[in-house]
Image (cartoon, rainbow, N blue to C red; front, side):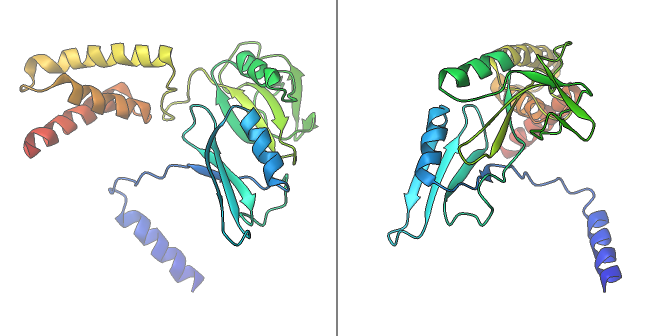
Length: 241
């Protein structure tokens, strides 16, 4: 039966090879805590947006949701939300454009956070020990200021572990950071590619092409792929008109 199941799965994968993947956006992470109000005060102090605080009338359930600034993913915690032991959520990454500025902001909010550090071997495991699996914390930013290489860490009152990670340029296919400098450059790039498209294209509104191109680039496609995606979008728009 196991062999048949594996074959069926393999067959399904092959038959769907040309089907575009459905978006699956990670939007919620569950954080196990022991004291809900204490955790709420802590995450409020971080400056995160409180999205919801719902409790059942019977008092047997409560869920609180916070979203970090600029994040598409939120956290939830509460009463009877998870059976995981408080403090067992570790290696939770918060991506920041400037590690020193982000750390300074948390210090100003009264958060106990480590100094900035990097990993002597280049890639940090997320574990809080100074040395584990051959990884060694070294004080200070990555000497070459490379993306993904500089960190600072802190914990919530239950011991759930968070890492700030500096990121200036994403890996290929990982999309773009939506900060002002990146968006400015993306607009200029979009203008340039649209300039090549416009002279020979049927009459259209530039915003349709811009939107399709920019979304494709933000989602990790190359400039060439985004140009093709924008062209397909314009064809679909004209066909639907």
